[in-house]
Length: 132
Image (cartoon, rainbow, N blue to C red; front, side, top):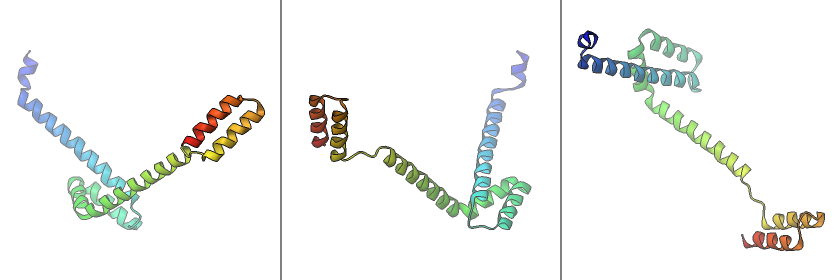
């Protein structure tokens, strides 16, 4: 039990605060680096300069980038999210495209002609297609 006495509760709490602050800073660092590398409005030299600044002066570099480029980061993130949403919507529309009632009746008639369904099933399918 002497081990616990050597590391009091407040020191444990302080260690946790420091650890989580470091994890948050790492998250911000990777977000900034990803934004720097994804930018299309900056030349390669500008990107290299920002990366060197962030690497040489890590805390200061990240915070200066956030202050200087916060508006651009927001616009790029919103644009990327909108593009992703548009692609997802297009995919869902292409997969979930419903056939018109005439197409559904034509398919049912084709199934009837091939003997896959009975006359009663055809009538039911036709009624369902026309009811939509």
